[in-house]
Length: 315
Image 1 (cartoon, rainbow, N blue to C red):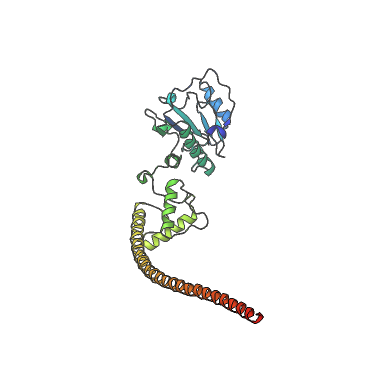
Image 2: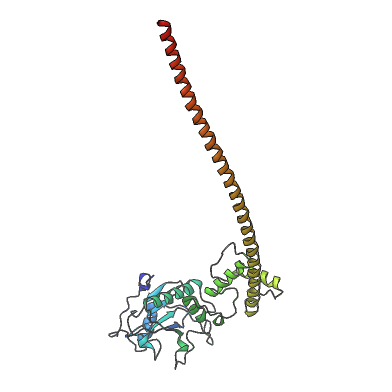
């Protein structure tokens, strides 16, 4: 879905003319460094810095609402060195601990899902995007933004559907994204069902119970954590299942071939019997036709005889 279909316009008044961005090569993710902040507050803070206004292009609040601050097409003021080639996406919240200041340890699910959707939709709208970084990953940056509690890697992986397991940290309850979906599919393939939620990409209590059930069967610590050890054990179990399935399939193919042979023999035998019956029917039919021919001839001859007899009497 195009981001403009659901992104709300904050209708901010900028203190000068905005420049269009000549290229869009990346996305920079930020936090607002404030647990609560409206789009207008962000705008006012940036105006007080002497900027034209809000430096971020997109603002995602904790309730999952998405706002356009600086127009999507405009050069931002959010990450020095890459403003002219990137879109700035900011999340409401304080995701880095500072002395004496309240901060957020966990991102609300609504905000996480909205950020993933925003990144996905921006990549679809701007197909030349090559990178997604946190503000602190931009070369030359000295900031902690978006913060140590900002789920940067999980957002990027969920938005890009990265298939590289090496890029994913150990999984545990509370995680979400494509990596969790792959785990859930693997669990179900091994016979550990998830009847309530199924494959939803969320590592909840049901997935944790299935993980621990597998760990128990494999003799591993039942701590609910999915690390490289359990992934190897699951891969080995799946390989064993594959070998067993291939053996069952081979036996089934052999049985099918045997039954096909028996059916062919039975068909050939039945076919011969049918041919024999048809031949007998044809012979009987010929005799039946001959019988009726003779009967008709006899009736005709009897009629002629009676006619001659009557003629003789009358004379």
